[in-house]
Length: 485
Image (tube, rainbow, N blue to C red):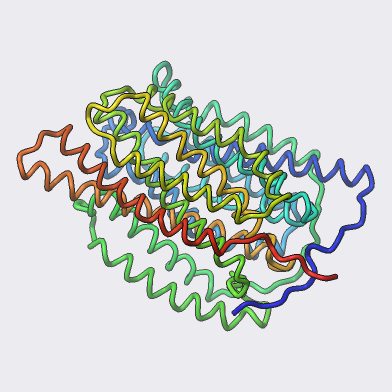
């Protein structure tokens, strides 16, 4: 059901030069900090083989560095809606960057896998808070008519940081010990924390909202169980797992049913941990669904493409990182233009071509074979990246811009949660399909390289098929409705 909302597109009063400068500084500080935490999220992607060797651990054990991070993000993000309403901007920022910097220091000092995983968990707590804080603050400070431009800057952060993460990681691992991945990030995190404490001003007014103590464990068990189950499934079926793959998925699914029912009950009373009344706004719902489909394709591609480059083409991790770098940089370069276009023409004229480009990129990747050239890989990745650049800014802006201001914190938390769960689902689905196909090919007598190429082809076909749903959904996306003051 669609609901009518109070005015959000009503003209804002002109800001004084002092307030305008304050707002620019706040947004810039949050953008730099968000870039740092997202860069850290992907910097581990090509480091697992080195860590397995240096720490003398199995692939299943090393995978916990990624699984624990995703799991923590999925558990913490739903709680950020409460934090953003209850605590001042500067305090939330200090909490986020303080946790991130502390976790980075723990990782840098870690003598073994156990403490390293713990450090990643602490890092993830800070990362989970930072992105909803950035989104909510932008929606609060930026007038509707220029939000597309500002969201374009956020899209630069979201696209460039993951793109250069593997490249930076590859360079570090070629010349330095793996701990330098954290030592080099730590001063950036500490610098952002110090600058934020000194310069960041409070731009929101906290209000006393109750914390529902039943919703917190339900959210942790529900989202945590689903993401853990999907991550275990994505590792190849959980052959060494202490429990069946379906058990955490079942527990998480049941907990989510109770969590959703409780939020629907508490929402009208203004007591929900995650106010699901956001889904009563059709623009928000369609945009979030499309964002989830895009994240499934993106995360699946992030996992599969390096496997193809390294295991099929035989390139080194650093070369793999450099090969996907141009696509990420193109996304970043296009983001400001896409943001300005959104402000002029709205969402639909951008997301439909964007979905077509994403789908074309994935179908092209499904044609990659053991003898394909590096140039083809680069070209196909650029096509996919152009599509994602056309998607992210309009979807972020139209989804959150369709909500009344009091639901911005909850909308940001919902969007972040969907991104994490959809990303985990994409990884699980793509890798599981790839693994099943590789097993079948090798059982039929194929060699390792040919079997891997066939498995990757099956995974990309899966992603390409999902992308067709994005094209359909794109016709239902539109700019947040202009409302009458």
